Image 1: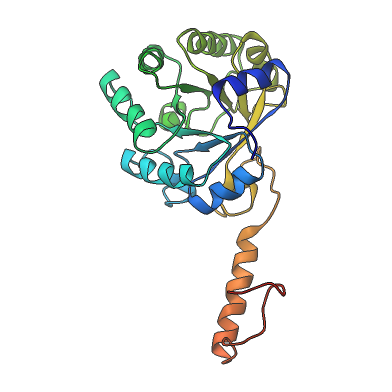
Image 2 (image 1 turned 135 degrees about the vertical axis):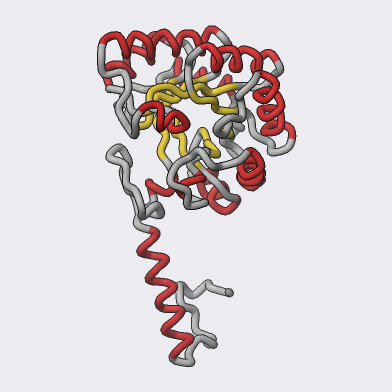
Length: 272
């Protein structure tokens, strides 16, 4: 088994210019597959609200739901660094942040939490969490929990002043203890400048190739999120169509009275 990924591993990867592979994961069997595939960072994202629970955005997902899914993921992971998303309002006060961040490590087995935003309240939360031994990954650019405030899914940091503000926030996150920062929907040149200015790793999503790593939503990557396909997502499989076809074959066999059979349907080694 490969050595477990830690905060120090990620810092060493940045120094060595080894790209960090990150992916969202929400359940045990997927976590096993993602971990075995060699993914470095697993994010139990609040995106599960949309891709798993069927909500229109990330806002409705609760701490208890996030804890539930994080527990399932950590049971299946032997190597990857597992980060859990702090859901909307989980860090409304510093007391909330510490209590909820602590739950992710103590109850769910995560290695770190992710917190959206870089304004004064979030910076204070990052500082307080790290002082309590809870590693924090920051998240700048488009932050889904601020969807209504930002006016929709929009690229951030397009103007010179906005880019400078993103850099300032990234540096503040680093100075207050963040171990990495996600850059979402940020112009490639801005993301590159931020990446080169920080000692901690940057992980991009829709932010160009210059970040220290890339993250995608699992369901976008394998074709399971049929309601929405982001422009920045590359699809490597179409598992939705594969599942529909397999289930149709099952239905056909049941209706035709040929479901009970000694013949395997997928390979000679099938024992199901």
